[in-house]
Image (cartoon, rainbow, N blue to C red; front, side):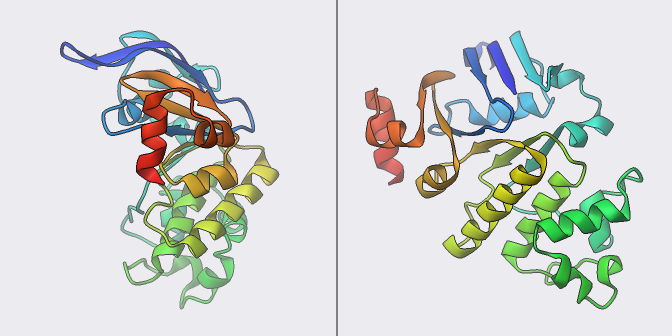
Length: 239
């Protein structure tokens, strides 16, 4: 993932100002910042919903806005804070009706996410029609990761993906993300404010402020030795 001198705004208001950062292959990076720092706009640009007014946004060397919808899930996976169920079976939740995704791929990702036994114990297994009460909150989020990972993308984007879960389930999901990275050499871009998760899992933290990178470093550097007053206040606010 690369943002190269990206400027973007709505009407006259600039949200991102000459923003540049990279996420390298196999790296785990977290974006942090207060509301209005530009994190949501970064997501929209990555998802190809907008084009930058200046600069470039690339995923795997391809301009994000030029990636066809049918190819997106093979280039990046996207996990939100809560699961969005589609009408259909458990298998349909994972494949999103994509005929290119095989039953073997569905079962492999279910095994990687620790859901295989749970799914196979259902009345119709993978063909069981989904209802909201079928899985626990943590299991729905594991299913969300399975959906994002089934097409084997090299990049995973996680937007507050564990913030609504208790610590036990969070650790289970971090273990799963470890396994996925080991199995597939994925890169991770997190948007979160959970310092425990950041310290446990991430290689690098990028602090956003007013549309630009305020500072970046390892979790220890950012949390224990912030260089700017803004970062120091931000860390204090989420401790």
